[in-house]
Length: 155
Image (cartoon, rainbow, N blue to C red; front, side, top):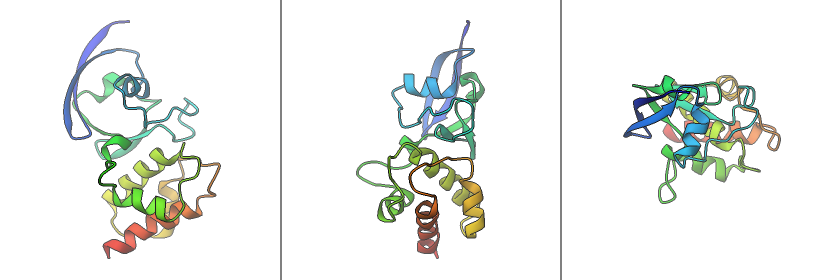
């Protein structure tokens, strides 16, 4: 395959990189050392590989790396830090919404995209926003509760 240069913003940092034309975004992120984006089904069904591209969630297993040229990409590594957790990360911990953790990065980014678009969503909107993210451990109640906690804290 042929390589091409892409320029984009990754977690608020300018990046220029050479990518194979058929490289998936999830694989490219892993090659860059960003392993928080999980590869689950590889078919866009589970949401484990969710990232935010130009403000919208996307399954990075379905996006080719060249498609992010000129775009802004946020991964879980761009959400918070060990020293300063994002309010969603804090709420997930406090509400017990983190079980095995495999779905957590995608859930957090889906929640962030929702709250960036709608700072006061109803519970139904929260449920809909995470509906593309599968979780086998929590039953979703604690996850929705954590997102609601962040909403209430902003009020």
